[in-house]
Image (cartoon, rainbow, N blue to C red; front, side, top):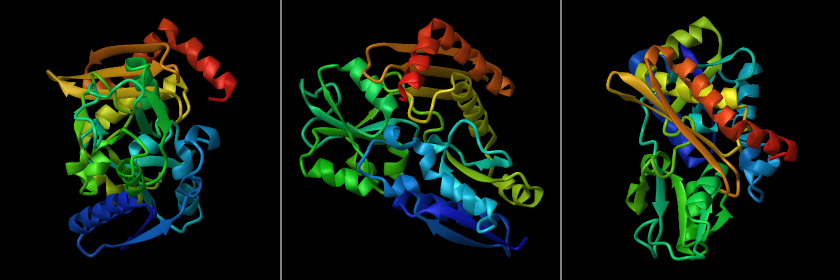
Length: 308
């Protein structure tokens, strides 16, 4: 195969990530041509409602998978935090790039830190996970849904619609907005989403394409991602459930922290586990089982019954 077509969303961040992967592929495979197939997904078209109401983050990748199934594209590049824990049959994550900054970022014009926010401050975020964590930490805040691309969200902050907004640090840095970050929120405060900061390459489970993209795979990042995605899969939460999972390599092993919270922040289950990197997926399942037994199972069942 001498030519690869990459399906991508048209957002600035998606295009940056896809162009970055295309450049890496051209560098590693001289003579290979790579082209982009930009698309507008359902998630991009629906901007006036929270994702939880319209089907979750999977709406950002469904059309890209259809393009691959129909032979209009060979692979797709994703922010792994947007990818559901279970992929459609026949699809795999062929490679993951080294993880960028996984933290959440606090942005504000008026206040120097999250702790400095006054009671009643309006904080914008699109994430159920962040809403749950923020409400648990600061029930005095007004948490307001915030949709749109990064530029749109920054404009709303600058216009005074919000006292602060919370975004992923990696996306801001990739787009050149790192200077807008007021404070990086430590994982101990705001546990990152599963896969946050990781760019993944999805493709059909076919040897030729896998051979081309596999050279970009970063093993340490893949181990962390395997633990986090196994946690999410065992929890059986939707992409919109208030679930967090974050793994790091430490002292020769792998440490994984997980969280399940109520949307209103009234209850949060949080635990951690450590073990061998080779057992990453097993660690994720084991931690999920502990969280489920602690009460997260009943909470998630209630959320599913309500359609959350």
